Amino acid sequence: MKTSTKPPKPEEEESYEVEKIVDDRWADGVHYYLLKWKGYDASENTWEPEGNLQCPSIVARYRASKVRDAEAKQYARGIDVSGIWNCPSIHKLRVVNTVDSARLPDDFTYIDGYVCTAQVPQPSTVMFPCSCTDGCGADCACMQVPYYDADGLLCIDHSQCIIECGDACACSRDCPNRVVQRGNIIEMDIRRMVAKGWGVVSRKRIRRGEYICRYTGELMSDQEASALKKTHSTYLFDLDKECPAGRSAHFTIDAQFYGNVSHFFNHSCEPNMSIWGVYINHLDPRLHELAFFANRDIAPDEELTFDYCPNMQHARSSRSVQLGACFKCNCGSASCRGSVFA
Image (cartoon, rainbow, N blue to C red; front, top):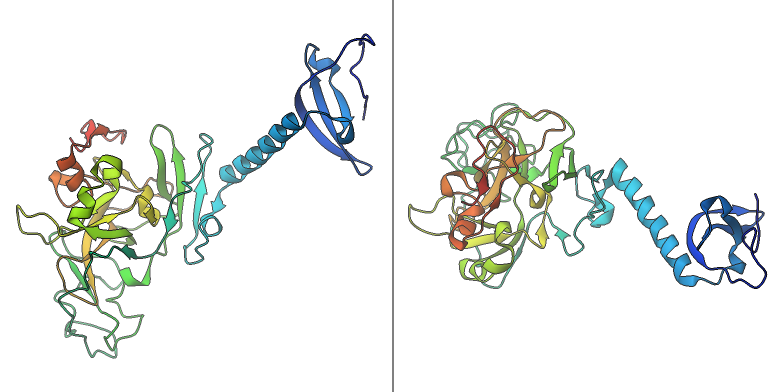
């Protein structure tokens, strides 16, 4: 390794300024930096021991760039987000970015359920538990209709809400009428998309009717949600699955700062997911949960999307439409409407 305390060919009375650090390495226990000298060609770069350097700001910038480069390589390979968000319950969820230098938002907290504001009451309608002990079937008090088939795939149309067995029911956690509450088991990547920001893809095939995840976040009143209209209306999702026609929802989920992987789902005018209302432990129509299911077979590495504004109803967009939020749609589908919330 060629080293020198000065660049070659200098005049003794000249001063020499470091332009940047090109590389570094260790040799015989000494940390060396490869320096590019200001006003000199790269062919005259020299290796200098760290002790000879008098440019702390340049060294600091170089070290920071190495950290960024190492992080970029990790993001390109895929990072398990359970460590990033300190949430061990996240099921095989990775973040991948080969597009730019963007990182997951620092102000986002991953949660499996809801964070409720003071204006959210306890559910007003209790559920009468079933007494099934051999698996719930046609006689189960909770099941108004069979919601899932033998493979656990959704088998009802979009006009119905799902009622799952609750904590007070006698059936076990393996009950076929407990799908949403068992949580997500699909392996997904939060992936950086060209022209779309973050999105989500599944690493494996998803079958039509398969449960994907819930929409979680901060649960708040309609009045509280209205106050957020100027900041992040696109993350507001009204609980309006069973609202009478012309009536607005009493409560809204805000996934801007709290939520799960659904925070990163993008819009599509031809989505591969749809949303169902779900009741677990109560039947209060104001406080149902929201669950995503595949509305068709989804191939591995296909982006998971839903329609933010299907017929201007039943979506987080229902509020955003009222608030005038509108932006260009980049879904690229054959039936793209050109804009979202318009």
